[in-house]
Length: 382
Image (cartoon, rainbow, N blue to C red; front, side):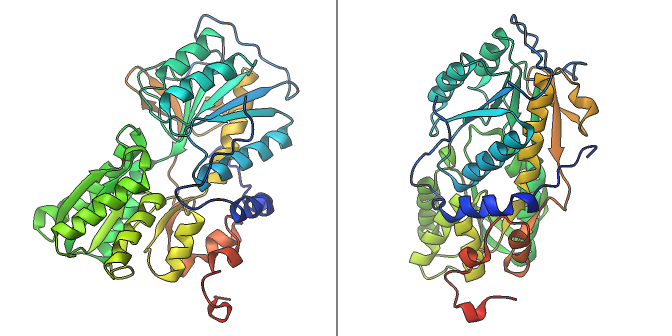
């Protein structure tokens, strides 16, 4: 990247504090921090009917962040990192969480627009349903950044994410290396989340030759609406019953669904004997990995993208050209080629297993004592 944000170690203490008091995979509640075509030369100009202001410096810049949910540990950590970066840059973040409700997210975003924000960052519950948010923001002269999840069929200003196709490839590559033959359960994410489909595409890029040869047989192929672990649990339980517990791998697309899969496997005495994949390096997932029930999770160095998103928002508010500040590409969203940053580096996105768990600890992502708290201290690695 032209401007690489290497901040992970600087925020280690903050993240550790957040994670130590965070919920399990499914979450226990929602605690938002605040209630309330190719790139153009000036990304901060929304192209709407309004006229965006361009503050001369960080003073007075207000960034709105609309979260699909804060009920998952990962998103709480993201918010904490964004807020720390905003404080460093002398700007303000206001945030709201929609608790998985796409209609609530639209109304919350419209509310933030009226609060005088300069840029709106959206983590969409439903990438298609969120298009009106972009239109409303543009009517007020406010540019919009889609973070992590693409907003489709609209005049989106900027998109920043990890390459989700690559995520799926990493998961499936690990799976076939550890379970090259047998029955596979595929548990995808939310069908309304574009990322879930990109992850599945990546998985199939790796799996298809093995399916074609007959080495792998997909006997369960389901999607968990809203990434709901309860749906994943039902699909795995039903799959085990229908296939007489004959399963080599449960290829789940995130850690919440992985936890549900392991619950179902545990009920049949199979936990630890079946390859289970995940994504996000949640605390509970990392605990399962060192305990031996979850095989891996895809670890993405979110701090890099969180900080980059805040920096991009500030630059947009100032009327700067993002294509000169970041290593950008474009992603087609059904209406235009959206200026985008796609993180693909193997240094920033890779399988996290029992053997390299120290990486997440050294990065400050999770504290060692929390990851290994269910393991006798005498068995902790050096």
